[in-house]
Length: 290
Image 1 (cartoon, rainbow, N blue to C red):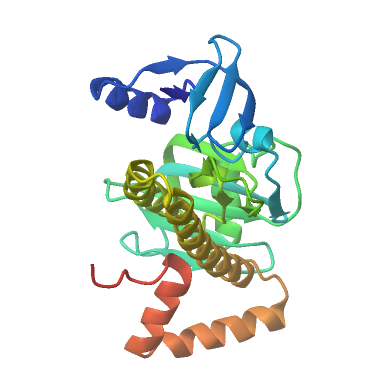
Image 2: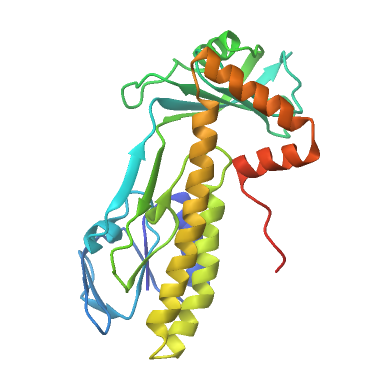
């Protein structure tokens, strides 16, 4: 059985599950998760009690299953908010084929090419905390703030914009053996480098191998899943450390600190090894041989 919320991504996953013969129950809230030595009993608001050997919690950063299992989600919220916008522009002041990261006293500006004629994704870090849902007032306000930070363009269209806060969190290793956390239910990192999705996919792919092996063997099941948990936790800790370092470095506001950062980055970019280290610090190391 698969229980998923009703949104676009989970809807696609549910459709694939149904094609594979998995029963999907939409808009079904889980009310309790009771674990014992032999398995887990899950109770919801629309179904009778369900008995299973393991439960996989893939229900996001606000995971209901994680909360019901009593697993702490430790970490902190980063200061400030982020504003994203997909803009169709003309006459940009910076090369539209390159990624630009501009740090200054007003905050970080990132401009990303979208490989669509005239479109760019603009990312602004707004250092001061703002009310939930508050933004810069639409594409005109976003363009004005970007111009103040060093990127100008004539905005012709805004297809999408979003304001959000970001955090760094990791689920505690609290001894729960049969509620398996993956994706954002297990860890949340800064979006710099785009590593959160890849980390969640690695959780799912590795669990798809570990869980059938554990199910097929009665005795070693705990040991197999304990090894999986250790490996996933080590991977998550590495991603959280790298994204935290990159976030702190690119959101520095004091002039001396930014000068030191820029000097180090410029020096590193002059060598192939330095460029590789910077890329890996932001986006993660290359995978080793299979």
